[in-house]
Amino acid sequence: MYNIAVLTCSQYIYKEINKNIIEIKNESLYKDTSIEIYDKTEDICRSMKSGCVFDFIFIDLDMVMEEDFRIGSYIRFNLMNEKTKLIYIYSEDFDINELLKVNAFYCIKYPVIAEDIMEVFRLHNEEIKKSYLLVKVGSERVRINYTDIFYFESVGRKIKAFTTTGEYDFYSNVKELLFYLPKNFIQSHRSFVINIDKIKCIGTNYIIMQNNKKIMIGRYYKSNLKNIGI
Image (tube, rainbow, N blue to C red):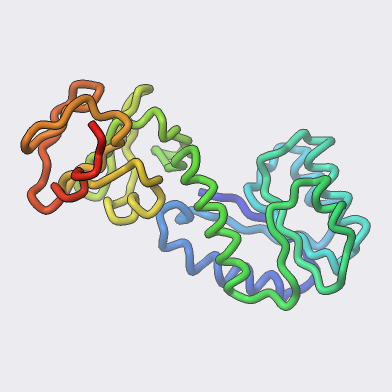
């Protein structure tokens, strides 16, 4: 579900990044992640200018320092792209102000290790938790704002999201879903995860959501509802 580019001449850097991306592909959020390697700044700039979109770009500062900073400026100011996350890899000190100018997402000191790569995606997951859930619906990536979600229902191998804007089906399971959701989402039943901010009222063994959907409370999940101030 993500497109990643690596700008480097170092096969070591590329292999380390690629190896760790393969490992996280087991998570549905990263299942269809693709990775491309570039060894020239002008090539990746040309690709982006022609419409290629990257979610993450890992930039090896030791390749050509001046040009690598230039790509950040090109992405932010020429392409007006604030969404692509820029991750800089370095071995020597550099002017931190250059990274602040281009809103760098993360910096990794050479040599690159697995923990560095995983930290990038951990921070990305935390960022996602604050505002929206990114899921694959059919062949499209869809962002669902947390504030729009009433509840999720697990149906077979899929999760169905019920929101103010419609219903969305995507492949996942309750355990994996809960990992990405913020704290205002709780499991109320084996098959249901609810947004507590969208609860209308709570009965003895059921919940009425603001869309008037009645959801039964599973016996093993009653404790999850004890501290809700409704």
